[in-house]
Image (cartoon, rainbow, N blue to C red):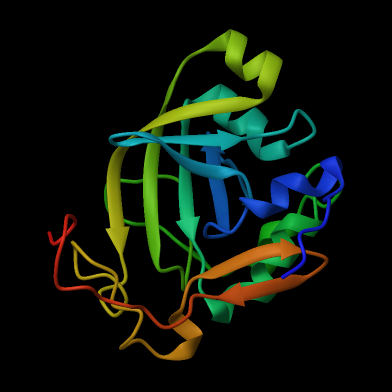
Amino acid sequence: MTIRPVELSKAYRLVQLGATTMLSAKHHDDADVMAAAWVGLGGPNKVIAYLGTQSYTRRLVEKSGYFVVHIPTAQQMETVLYVGGHSKSTMPDKLGNVPLFYQDGCDIPLVAGSAGYLLCKVIPNPQQEQQFDSFMGEIVSAWADSRVFDGRHWLLDEAPDELRTVHYVAGGQFYAMGQGTKFDHGPGQD
């Protein structure tokens, strides 16, 4: 085995193996969807999302106080790249090419085909948002495709390949969630 130095500007990629996400937001009749690589848990029932100042979606989140985190599947890789590569600022009809639907109790559009969705209410922290582009949201509703999540556990081993969650690592390269391994002992048996 050889251990090599990693360029510091690329070091974040060592821990960026979590699920790729998309974020949607809406204010009045204006909605957008973006790809978001830097989204993760911020504690029990909390999500942290990095939203750069150039993001059209960020403006909608700031105005509405809500966003939805989508967990895309392998069949959505093209959609993830599309919403991540186009800004509504320069392409007002961007969402015309994205399959959207609305879930009861949520007026923010959801991208059809995702494995799961988390509706989040922003927990305001202006200093964190302005200085670090970091938004924390409380999960107020959640939905999942029952073919891949049974309400408590992921079922990716039984799911078709196109429904596996994806992980974006840079340069158009995705990895689909692989085969799971289960242990019958120790903590985490819930």
